[in-house]
Image (cartoon, rainbow, N blue to C red):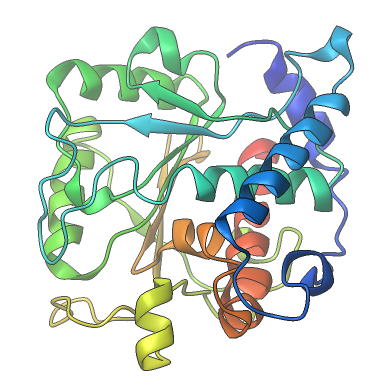
Amino acid sequence: MTTSFKAITSCVVLIAVVFVSAHAQFFGGGGRRSLQIRNAATIKEQEDMEKAIAPAFKEDVFTFARLRFGDDQGFGFGRGNKSWNDDTPDADLSLTYRLYQSTSLKVRPGLSYIDITTKDLADYPFVYVAAAGSIVFTDDEVAALRTYLLGGGFLMVDDFWGDSQWEQFYGQIKRVFPDREPVLLMMDHRIFHTVFNFKQAPQIPSVGSFINTGLTYDVGYDFENKGHEPHYFGIYDDKQRMMVVICHNNHFGDGWEHETQDPIYFDKVSEPMAYPMFINILVYAMTH
């Protein structure tokens, strides 16, 4: 990892534990911001983030890095045909601005899409992958990801539902770690209480499913074996350091991307779960 790893680790423990509602700023009384207003706001947010970084410490900031995978950008196992870029750019830009706005972190503005290579991964201690149920790794990606994770890196896995998508992801992550099994994280695990104290495992539904059904899970998937409850798994190295957190039956990307689409979705999903649980995951990853 680069020198930014130490800076991020020391900085992240100073995260403010107060995560306040931003209704007045982001809703202006309710409703989705127009495209023109949202684009102008995003430009201003990015400028503010850039100004907050001292030139001498330009590289010592947190970067939200999203992994690219797959030649055809999504294989559509189960319902849907998602790819690595699901929810971006809005999800990435909203998340990084919220981290800048609500914590003590200095956060790199803009978008960081990286390939699964040893060279690219080496610069990022924390990486994120969406559409996990569509992943098919190449042999080179398997080797690079294994080296990265065993060398101190951390992977957050998101945005997949049901049995078929779980089996697809499980088969691919077992190629990375044939001798390591995902461990179900129970509610007494520290990751649920690092900064924000969750009494039950958060579940982030896709915005359309939530608005149409009011349910906390996405309907239409095959939930016969594992059920539709949220599942969080960890994969550990030989020293019991968590290398991977798997957020199954969850869609964090929608929780970030669509925070302004519907006030109820913001109240019930984005504000109390999608952002706080990510902060918990990030703090846990960088301090363990």
